[in-house]
Length: 583
Image 1: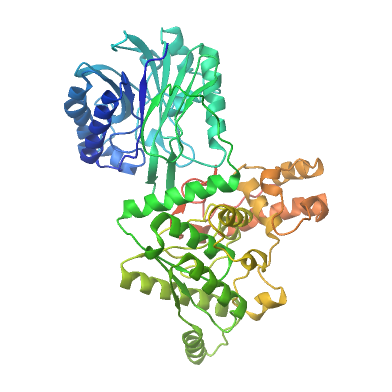
Image 2: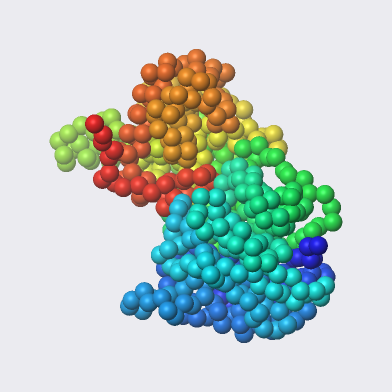
């Protein structure tokens, strides 16, 4: 019998021990009023999980433990508490003034600490680097904690996040806890969101439940944190499985709050589309980003193209229409079509809209450069000066208004380096920086289907174009030099799935490419009818080499909201100098 458990699926402010512990006290009190016997907080709840080298700060480590012992423990009379925190480890000497620590949990009941433990399987992958900060628990330390509850004592087998993902580990925490007498597995998590992540969690948790014959509670953080280069979303979606691995309760995704499990009602697994997941995540992430930074307004360039249209819609939903300023910055290469579409979109969204032409200043800068250098400015130099002037205009509006610039670049453009440093690579955050171009189209269609059709249909049909030269004239069907129905999923395969060109060729020849990303959005013609196997493999190598060659741009980009298994930033880790060379 699973006791009545309250999952505190809350959003800790990174580093704010005082504020987080105050909120936790409120949630413990609420749990008691709602009849819960046990309240479970996620991994790193006292400080937040993504706090960088603050994890080594002696003040933070000391005060994190003190907050639990001195503030939370007295509140555990009548309702037991499990809480994740950074706890000091005096035996681990890091040198200098750094504090040794563990990624730990404490169990509180009857006003005191009744048990403790730490994460044993540290994770050094993706956006996390546990071993830089934490000492792992030993196999001998992995033991259940007996917790006195109103209905009687229960032995909790408490794990922290990666401890549950032990399929390829020599140490199997779940089995050890079961063998040592646990009656319920409780997994504290700060597990980041990416598309299709929930089914992966459920499958892994179900294996642990079936292997051990124990019910499993999965408690996840819900909020927005960062590591400097990536904005990391924690989606909540906590759940309870019975001993057979079946879903017995599921908390909402992207919803901060206290949720009782078992809920008493049937648990249904949601099956959102890829676009629906992206939409929910981006709105949640943008709202959280602005809340965390203390800014309440955004400035973005509105070109009449698909990327800026989607960004504008997301910002309006996250912040409100009165908090968004859109600026159209035309030159002689900007078509009447895109100018009118930008204005129409702004009108439909009800946002402030300014037309700030830049052709005069671009021409003056061109003439000045040519007069001083004695060289004609042409080609990419002339194209990029337009992009950089747009960045300058946006930054000026943002500074005057006390707002943040939002960049419109997408993941597919970034993988090719098809973006201008200090031009469209500008701003405080890139909402679409982990969204492939094809997914931008899917997201636009979803927004129109579900949010009142704010995006004019023609934005979805005109050629995607930077409009920086006559060769990119959308009125003549000209635009960016890529087939995005091939370019975008190719990058997703190489970056997110880490496939080799040879592996991709084999999937192509077997016609087994993932339809979730390879279904075309710009035409009805599949990739199998566009390329031969030889050309497909060659194309994969071209994208691979382009990614290698353009790292220097991405490391200078604004932070990117993580939405996939591997996002640019401190997730897909790159070297400016490294180039793969084999015989």
